Length: 165
Image (tube, rainbow, N blue to C red):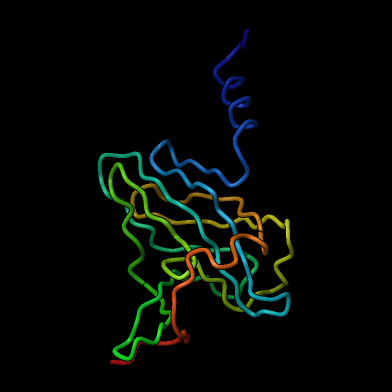
């Protein structure tokens, strides 16, 4: 039926869901999406689940995209007063061997700072994720400004910046 392995690979890649990315079978990115709080926002974020199908831990160490002046890996933590703060995580996120790590609202995520254009519903953003072992994985991230408005939201107040103790 198929004349070559390349034909099979082409067929399979054409059937892949938008946003699904593979890095030589080791890393899979599932259900990515991006948001900004308003059309006039100077920042936005991307969320997804990263699966590691290898037998060794890997680490997401950086991300890049041409829609922002800076792209950083961020998380939320509570200070001693219970105020939620968003901070950069320069060491990145461990993706456990045979496991997954969720980048979700109110927790770990990819942060777009200094957006160069508004994030419009339905846009597709190419985002390059860089892993210690798997290397670069390019993910087509759809913008979904309507998705689960309270999904993953943490309770309490939030501010950006370094944690205060």
